[in-house]
Length: 169
Image (cartoon, rainbow, N blue to C red; front, side):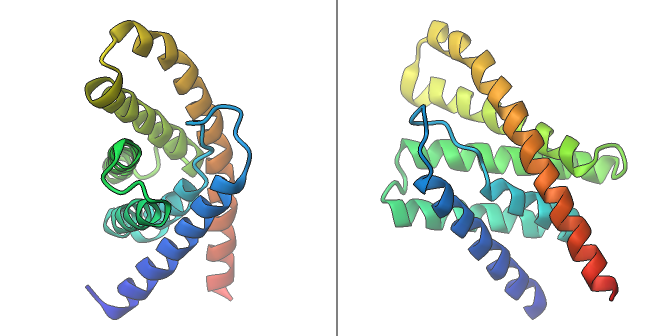
């Protein structure tokens, strides 16, 4: 890994952690509901620098954020790590197979769906273990994931366009 990649990963991870921290300050009508703002940075990293950088940003963000909040190795950490890794891999795989098939918005929605499916599965296995409850809440979680994935994808698209425009100058 080149020194430039290390700096890039560190900077993107810091942005993602800052967004995660900012998001935790926002009031939430439902305790587990998150907008996933830090995932914007993962998507930017994926689209501009590839899967390896995006995965490192995800791993660093989830680990350090959980250490800062005192949830490391707890259920919240497990759900966050499982969702983050699954969504980053899904987006990276689709981007690798067909780079022009999805825009950043489409990748973000896909990532949100995989993130939510992984979290629902992990919640079932680790915490809830009641299929009825999982089936009841899943459509709501998936709907919210599509909405937040769309918004985050739009923001990521604007950031990517701005970064590309500024790098051409």
